[in-house]
Length: 486
Image (cartoon, rainbow, N blue to C red; front, side, top):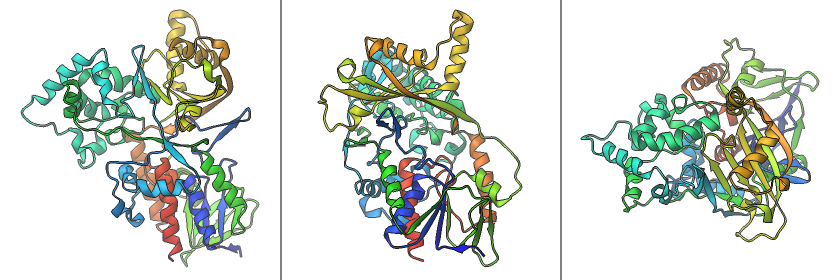
């Protein structure tokens, strides 16, 4: 018979690492099954040319409108509710600060119609709104929206409670709250660049998956009328002198150095629920395991396969990305920013993060080399390149494209100063936050819960679009509390 162990965690997710470390610290024996060399998934550092980078824009959010210090009871956390992490920001902050010092960052910008502005897409800097060249049109449309006799049923105040928001497209919600111009100039083009689909293919309640805002129309109009309502900016933090992904590296080192943790570097072949309620896990090479406590942090599709469940094959709709890792002399960078969202549709890049600037505790940096990461949706790029080829007979490779765009938008004036150290292409990396994919996830989850109702689900298996950094930390901590009290 196989090896018995109290706790088995399958997968490489950050939540798995958090739970394993907490259990091992408490003296519990843990086996982690991870057939991948990657630890932490998206939330790990990428090393190249002797430098460390996060995988694009990866920031900490330690504040939320729903934070309440007196109510951070992890037993009530529900990963199936995307916004539920807001109640536990202090819990996440305290955990991160066990391993890293962090500081709040500034300098979050956006590039709209050839100009740089303080960002309102992710940072809520609505003082920018009156400065935009289409501000008057936005103002007129909002006045008409708010001049109607009844408040719209699609008003943003309903987004967390109205059932309609579970099926409603973000296109309709945005138009109902922002008006046509704000939507067409900011929301729609940025969504298309990031996901290569329109907002009609995004569920309204999941609008923050592509980092798109949903404001109250009253709030927008107040800024345009010179009597702004109080809307606190979104506060982001970043590790001082490190990357966010360094946390995963530290957790990995802790696991590898702890005698209570055993790592099996192999994918499970089969998983069975036995009559006594325990689980039997078999492998091609390693001896089988038997446990009553198992957590799964890989995809539901992979779990369905190892459970041997019959399921119809329905593919998720996904999009692909390229991450371009750069180093540029500090004094050659002509725009000061931490994160730059680029809305203009003719620029293929949708976001640039200066991670050296993010990691500094103030704006002063000695002359050296800054680490930048550029994010491009390669599906959008291919579509736009095809159109350019048809009209101009020209196709530019990613390397040349990135350098040209950095010069075009004024980040640098000399292309020779840009050194690309790595290009990482992620094919079909992100499931679209749409109704089609939510239905597939729901069907897979139902099949899994019918077969193994006692299995703990983490990371991408825990809920649809519930794999954010905060979700992962909370899932790992909640699992530890649940198992540690048995």
